[in-house]
Image 1: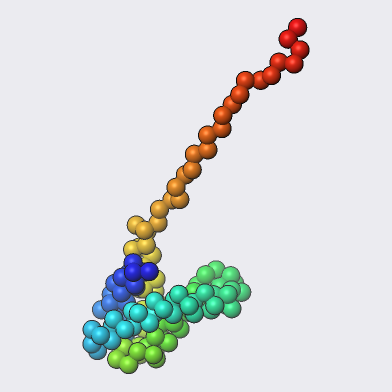
Image 2: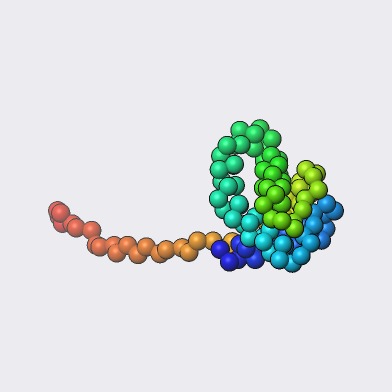
Length: 130
């Protein structure tokens, strides 16, 4: 959970620095936006993904950017000094946040441990030796 907050924090502050139209007037507002966006991604995003699954499939996944942009705008609505100027800055910010979190999560992905199963073989029984 802590790594998810840290990853989202880096992505959000990078989006604030890169995308015109996304602003955090104070560091506290930026930190609050990171916490709120992480919470929304944990709670609300899975529900939105299930509800919009036909559109996501129909658009070959591009509608995920719209879902992320809506979550970013909802974060701006909830956090006082964090502003998103409109839909297109939200889309740009969602793209930046998605790309940065994907790059940062590459290092976290580890293959699952392989379990070794040892099977003892016994000698075959000879029923009729002759």
